[in-house]
Amino acid sequence: MSSVDNDGRYAPPRAAVADVPEATDGLVLGGRGQRLLAAIIDVVVSLAAIFLASAVTPWAPFAQTRDYFSLSFLNPAMGFVVFLLLNGYLLATQGRTIGKRLIGLRIVRSDGSPVSFGRLIGLRYGVFSLLNVLPILGQLVGLVDSLCIFRASRRCLHDELADTVVIKA
Image (cartoon, rainbow, N blue to C red; front, side, top):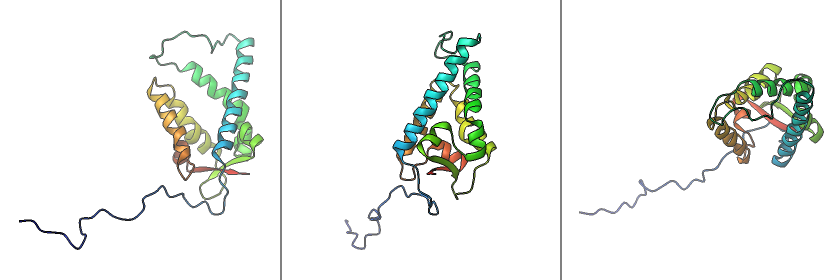
């Protein structure tokens, strides 16, 4: 008792399924390479500032004093403070970090409006900085967050959470 389905009811759909970029209302998204270069600049500037701070204070962030599987809050918290000291003014007034300013990028809301300082620090940077404290899980979240840049929308998880996009300034 075999019946042949001639009308195609049970056939798979023929529509193309792809990652559809979100509308950016005429905004030109920053390139992946530009964003990577800006992030590298931010890390180099931050590491230089942390190195200088550790040279003139008792803070020793580069000393290995814990095993990999233990929680450490002091160094990540101090690193976040250094990040805010270096980039806080630019983030609050222009929606950019030092690296983004040098490369010509800016962070805005997905509708193109300016992003608030609280949204930037709390959602875009703060949540993932807190997650980075967790051994292994924090690094995995950071990796997935970074790899999301390869989607057509060019938005990482921190962009999705904060409803931001990085555009050419």
